[in-house]
Image (cartoon, rainbow, N blue to C red; front, side):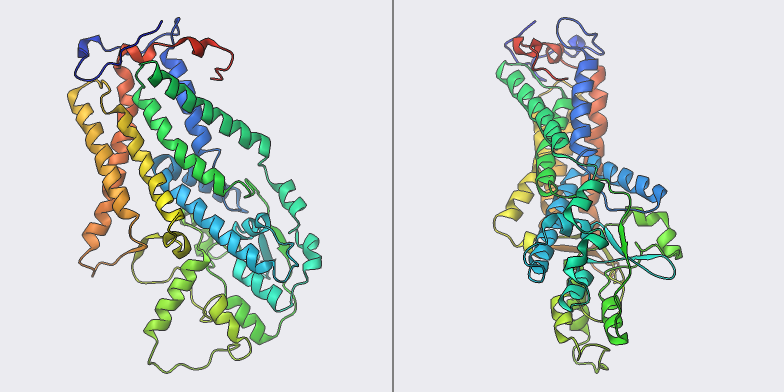
Length: 439
């Protein structure tokens, strides 16, 4: 069954809308749901590359938290992937200087996802990338012993549950779904709101997969090593380079808290920004020399400030903090903004779709525009911090709140529309009966 005319909200009688459709010569509601939900799962659950959590409960909850975040706001997962790739590339470049160029981005990703941990008398602590680089530069770790650390590429790939075949399969399924939608439109057939929403995940899926292609996935156990012998001064410097202690496994109450699974992994640029802010505040004040600063003067500039402070301890709540290298890039940042804006923008495909009621039609349109505007403004601020004494606090909270409300309306409206849609949504074209049709 085929048709050449695409119906709009203005040209269709709402009494002609149809609900659940059985699998007839055309396509039914079950086929529509299966195709869209399978593609959404590939764009969300499959694309997730979580950090390593030694506690099974934390591991499952953390991946669930990432999946919920990807469903609601896939823009942030895409930008997070880009930021992780930038840090991994930096660490790999720096480590290559002392490893004869043998340190690759796979090993850098492994470090960033808590793959290397050092044993203590209470448990294990995260070996942060800047700590690892410092140990290499000081000659305290011998790169020839990398297999004993579990840091060889073969060992990492053996632990990873990701493979190129699976990635290519996911990519091919997503590409075929996009091709189906293009063919429907070219044949004058309307897309269901669910198909429009599914399409909106695709650009962000591509961005995340591109940056996480080399990142190991679903590793359950880290590599544990004993720290090399160090003097008291060296040990003080090493411990001060830690970005955070909430992710360690030493039995502390804050490490056992389930709130940790929802916390974003701190990165080097965040610590560097915090150190610069604190150094600025301390200018003009007398400060006692720090242990190890005279011995290792380069460490404070290149890796982090030697003050033993927690990276998460600061005034206000950070809603957004983009990597400066990414944010100030004249090529990558505009592309990230376009990718982020593409998610609500692609919902505009259903602007003229027939919804069950006129109210739902305008709710869909309003939510789409509101999501686009709030996301565009939100991504223009490099570091968004909410402080209750700040007169801009209401606006700072309003932007992400508007986006979340808009996303909720679109998500609910997408599935609510299935109860009454344009019957032409279930019409098919000839090529859909061929063996190429995967779902």
